[in-house]
Amino acid sequence: MDFTENDLLGWSRIFALVLGMGWAAWMDHKERKVSNDHWLVWVKPALFLWALDLMNQGADWTIYLTASAVVAYASGAVLGRPSLSDLRNGSRLDGVVLIWYAISGVGLGAGAVAYQSTQPLEVLLGNDTGLGALWWKTLSVLFVIMIIDGAWRLRLLHGGADAKALMWVALLFPSWATVPLLLSDATVDATVALPPSLALLMWGGLSFLIIPFVLLVKNIVEGNIASFGDLRLAWHASRIDRTEVLNRHVWLLTTLIEMPDGTTGPHHRTRAPRTTPSREELEASITALEEAGVNKVWVSSKLPLLVFLFPAIAPLVLLGDPMALLMPMLGL
Image (tube, rainbow, N blue to C red; front, side):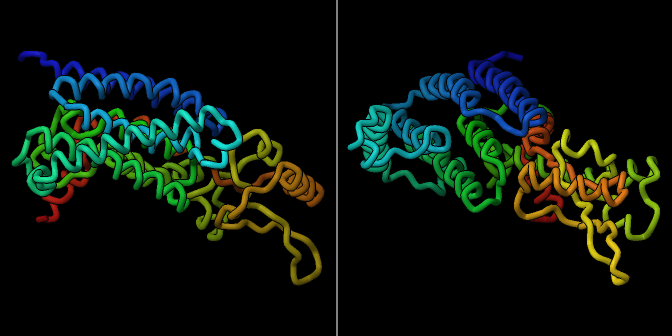
């Protein structure tokens, strides 16, 4: 089998995805934080490969500047949005970014005029493969970035690193044509498929479904279930020594409440607190538990999404879009 330029670009993207996402997942696991510098470094190979891909497809200047507009919008998650007030205050970076926005906007508008006769539905159905189709496919990445950014602003994605990672994946894989699928053609044959970045999010989300079973078995083996009430916690929490709480990324679920007889006793919440307590507040809670003689406490782990997105790369490359696999099974 011949190894084409598209194959080379596709596997180069996979290589960048594994390295960039793996590094980010490790930092998120250890520190629960991924610096903006990480994305500024790894966006470079993503943009380089996208530029080579567009060059390989014969893109014109409007398509390149439309891609630039996509990147300009995504950059707001890392660099922030420039404003006229910052520009008046002498911020050169904001001035450069505003010029970038303007030039990219001109290209996007020129592309809309040049390819206004191209029907998006025909592109979606695969009936149009010209430059107009390439322009619409490039523009569609902007819509994906906006969906991810909106989910972050609405707190549907709780971590900024999660949103930035998905935006980076959207730039790295602007369409399924850039993903070298190995085992299934369902995504290629599907009329409508989730974008690769959102498909990766869905594969990562599916892996969350395994966690309750793992935790339940773990708590049974460790003998943490002593009553029916413990079952309410055993599927989503763990029981650890009180002294370990400050050294681990967990939510403390065990608190003290006043009993009907006037004494104080432990109470185990089933949900993590809505707001993160300060370290001082957490230390005070642990001290109170120590004084009450409570040695073992229930905690809920702060699970970083990137840790689940990294292994989700495997089913993404092997099988493609999970919805493209599921819909035929449902007769849709």
